[in-house]
Length: 188
Image (tube, rainbow, N blue to C red; front, side):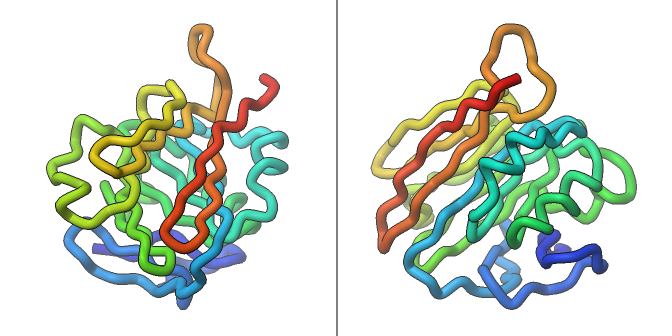
């Protein structure tokens, strides 16, 4: 399994030094030993990265894109802001998308976040697997809920407006073993 697209700049895929992400099979790609971090979480951009989304993600220590990127340039622009981990969504096709994992585990300190695009494809019990959170997209509906002590976070869609759904992304403050999420509504 290939590593996530991570690094600042436009270089080819490289194994990053920080933070850690693992694909669902457990292959590691680095380590983030910090216990405090600001996560920027985005999904369903469908080829559109709004200036307001860039502003909301600026200052993030890590960015997670939960799939349906749409265009590889979106990843490059996110990598200019912070180390970025991306999973493949159902609209991500072509050679550029083939290198994206279907799911990943991002570790921040002792916390493990399981990332995938479609929650319906979650085949493990995240609490039993030791995950603090499950990050997903696909529905374009932002949501924050806790099930069996595990945070389930969908940042919604930051791409083209769909029906009457809000245009959103999420931020999460990680401190020790706590994750404090917030949904950020963008002006569309």
